[in-house]
Length: 128
Image (cartoon, rainbow, N blue to C red; front, side, top):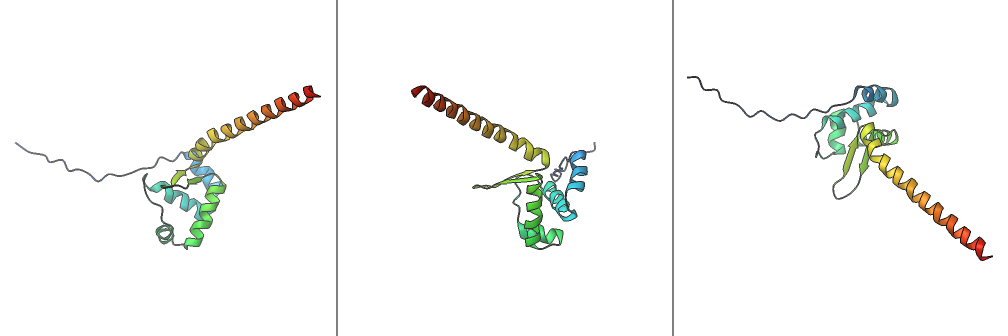
């Protein structure tokens, strides 16, 4: 009787990047910013982003990592929420999905403020 031992394989993490995002990022970003985006995609969740390590991996300076990160943020490919643990939203769809409810919430607050202002104005008009 032959015995087969199953070896526990090393866990691999694969990012699924939508093809349309890959193509739009190639058009929207500078080559090094695109590399930085792919670097971020290549890491598993819970990974700590270290500028020095990223710079060494991409063959650029830490200052350039910060510059390309700003480009990713400005073009909605990256969003970082600072806190006890920084949250990274990587990819345009993740960023826009996170921003959408917050934008709706801000618009609702403005609408409520506008309604209150109109009510106060109506009250002042009837007082005179």
